[in-house]
Length: 290
Length: 271
Image (cartoon, rainbow over all chains, first blue to last red; front, top):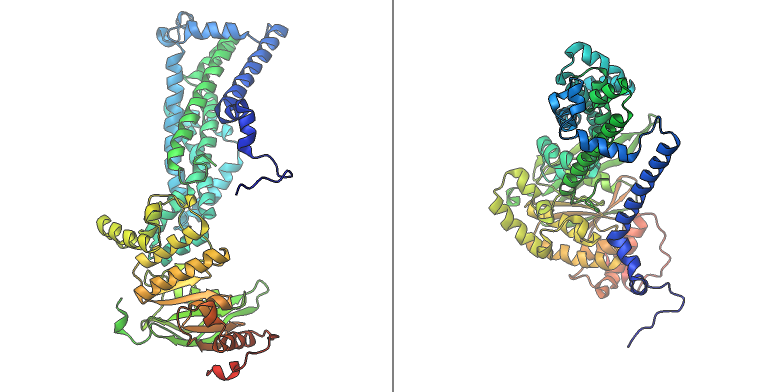
């Protein structure tokens, strides 16, 4: 016997989709892409309007595009100013990216290791917590001049600064993530015979990954700014260094091009982290970063 | 451990457990509890919420220290948690970051059992709980009842002689719970292990138990053998003997029984 739906019942989702297939299609894939494209177009439009209204201080998108085409692979302009040896922006993009990735990698390894180890070794937490609290409260940018004084105008200073910031952040986050691992999981594991090392390896490490991925993304986002600041203060290469150079010669187009490049590289790196985390977090409900 | 090596599977001698309240006052969770359980018995620990059932089970699991008295498993004092007394918790404790099979193999993995051996054992117990085809699933892909079966299989795979269960089916619906009772009883009959099962549901205790320990305000107020034929169907649970057991439990728990006693119920119980 066929059961007729009540006239008071709301329409079924599939029936609704059947009547408006474009809506379903939009929701599935085209929707987000279209919205993102619209958002991007609106931003470009606003930028164009701002450039028209303030041509002396805001370069047009076209000028920035031309600058990137002219200077990305090789730059006569920079060479004429004794910079880069004819190499274009790409060299400085790689320089900055390398420093950020090495610094974030190093800082993550140190921060996560110390954060998770401080759970089974409470003495470690007692030593590290006041240090983390002190440096966590102070703005990290204040530390930038110290690194330059201690290590000089070399990539090591920038890498160490990024590593220090990342380690601090990841330490705090991994402590919190470890505290958030449900006590029932720990008790269940020990009742099944797990010893301290097993609990660390099979409960704490995987159980904290979702929060740590989030922390890594925050650290990475901040690291680009930190690296650029360090380069602005004193470096011989890098996007921050070039932005500083363009600022001195009032090169608004170059400044804007390099800022955009920095943003693009940061987005690509964040995307790589998100993609990698999907594999790590495929056990979560969404398989995405939480 | 071979349970043939000792007389009692579990023995508690005058066990008391006190917790310190924020006010500084000592609050008794268990008070002078003593009993002895033979190997292979299915024991239900019954009582109201907050009266010490879970504390008693946690003492047996080694997750809770005793303030006074002694707790022994196969003659050895309980010094801490151990794979000889795995526990199924009330909460969902199946590790969500491990596949179903890895969850079942967890106890074997920490013991250092080879992968081949682990696989054979997990295959056996996954089949026993009816989840063989979900071996490679993530726990999030299973229902609450299926996850409880994974937790059961993990305990079974550990090959422990004592299984501890803290209201494991409390969060499940009636029908799923009844299905899991059958699964648990089948596995218990096959494995012949000693089971401690915490519940506040008299019907559940009547379905499962060989013996019911009634706890009230931290004290063991009744130690009741349940001499009813198995399976404990609706008919069995409606017999005068079963009703008398229920009435006695209610009385021990301080609940007045308003329902008239069936004829012969008073004589049916010899305790």
